[in-house]
Each structure stands twice: as C-alpha cells, then as structure tokens.
Image (cartoon, rainbow, N blue to C red; front, side, top):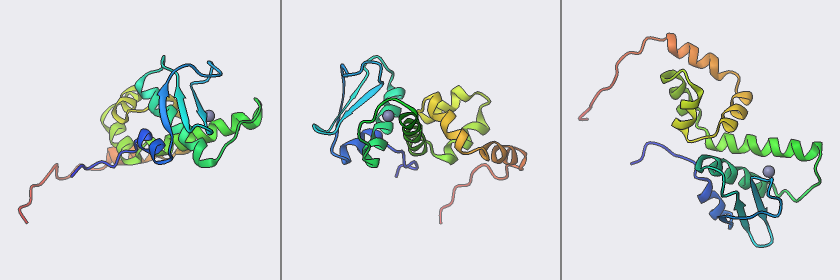
Length: 152
Ligand SMILES: [Zn+2]
C-alpha cells in the first residue's frame, strides 16, 4: 500500500471532464487557459512540469467554482489569488511540508520534496502562519524511537 495520498491535478481535471494539453493560448501572457465549451485546459508549453502541476490545480479550482470570464481588475486579481490558494491547499500536505521543513533549512528543497512551485509554497505559508511555530516545537521535542518492526 502506498503511504501517501497525493493529489493529482491531471486526475482531478479528468474527473471534471476536462482534457489538458499544451499549446498556443488566445492570451499568450496567461500561463493557462480553460475553454468550458470544449472542456479543455491549454497550458503554456514553455513552463516546467511543476509549474504545469500548479497551473492545472489552479484551473481545476476555477472549474469547480464555476468561474466565467471577467474583465481585468481588482475582482479578477482577487479571484486569481483565491484559485492559487485552493490549488496550494490541494497540492500541499501539511504533514509532509512540516517533515521537509524539519529536514532541510532551504525552502527550495521543500518545493522539490513536495513537487510544488515557490508560488504555491508562498501562498500556502501566508494562509498557515502557525506552521513555523509547529516546526519549532517539534524541533525541540526529543525524537524518541526511530522505528520499530512488529511481528504482531
Ligand atoms: Zn486563474
């Protein structure tokens, strides 16, 4: 049995009935574009695997919310941040992040460990300012038994 229940944005898109491809977008400055009429998410081919992972999770958030196109402006920026937050919540397992933070001092390593972008990490930590305290508490706790094999 696999000990991790890892969120897969591509599976989520498929469950929602959307195909995901890379290719030219109507607005090339956008990292990703969702066409509800043909149930298609188009990703920027120039972005990396981890960026795509975040982009698909972000687009799934729009789909689940039922977002329709709105003009540029404060409402759009709020909506984009909301979808970034939803994506980060889905992509980041709190316990795995804490374990990575206990193991390494470098946030870039946390991103590699969890297969997430620095944007996802930043948005998540803004929403969970208590994590730093929890890491500090665990760091000072005695570690106890490392492992035990039971035949029971
Ligand atoms: Zn968006």
